[in-house]
Amino acid sequence: MSLDRDTVARIAGLARIRVDADELDGLAGELNAILNWVEALNAVPTDGVEPMIAVGATRAPFRDDVVTEGDQADAVLKNAPDPVPPFFTVPKVIE
Image (cartoon, rainbow, N blue to C red; front, side):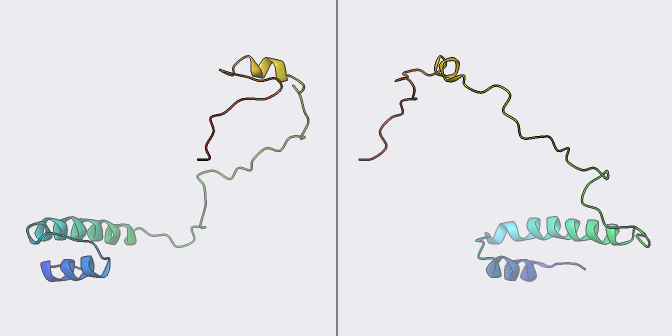
């Protein structure tokens, strides 16, 4: 499949993308290169190949939801620039 200047202009219009007339030839070449690459991918034999969502068949490891380092509010507030224990202070965002 080959796209010409008029087809690229029509596609740009349908996509509501403003393309200058002097850019149409270059864009047509780029789109034709993409379409040729897709056609090359279509030539790859995929009969009997299962669709996959990842490279390896892995599952996310699960762990127990257990608090391991709780009750450290003082240590956390040491990193705050202007704490008012037991809270962080933040700038006012309402006008």
